[in-house]
Amino acid sequence: MIQVVKHPLVQAKLTRLRSTTTSKTEFRRLVREITGLLVYAATADWETEVTIVQTPLAECRGTRLAGRVCCVTILRAGLAMEEGVQALIPDAETGIIGLYRDPATLEAVEYYRKLPPDIAECQVLLVDPMLATGHTLVKAVTALKQQNVGNLKLITILAAPEGVETLKDHFGDTVEIYTAALDAGLNEHGYILPGLGDAGDRIFGTR
Ligand code: URA
Image (cartoon, rainbow, N blue to C red; front, top):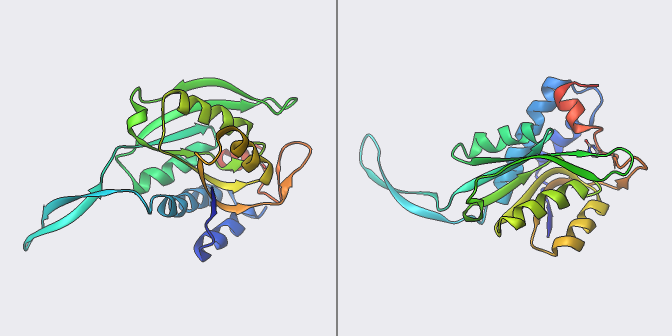
């Protein structure tokens, strides 16, 4: 299942994000903000439980999230998205998976993994700005499924149809994808078109 969040705020921010005139500072802020809006959409069906709070005037019945939440970030570009998740869900635990894309084969190579040992008990938000070939995310989702994660949503700023198909081939409908746009496709280097360029380089100013 893929949900493209068409909200005007998301689409206007995405347009700024794509532009070559957008500075590193603005790019990073936009990634955080779009992530927050995607998370807002992705968590709309999450269960809550009743909690009682004391206001300055009276006791009041309220709600809180029912379960634990873990945000799993894919290094390095996912880091800016993690800030967007933490802004909305400050109690979220953090998992990190380090993967790089071999430029020759476009295959993903894992070099780091640190997840909460009992992550299977959490509702997991996996964040990576670009669902391109899908190779990186296949590796990441496989790692999570090996730890019996069942409740998993992928938050990605942009998706390519090739990546969506790859995830579907591997995991069927068990990974719900929330994105700001489904772009046209990939170029020969595995970059999304029209896309926004290299998300990591634009977040960290490394080009
Ligand atoms: N990763 C990026 O940063 N950009 C793309 O277009 C594809 C993968």
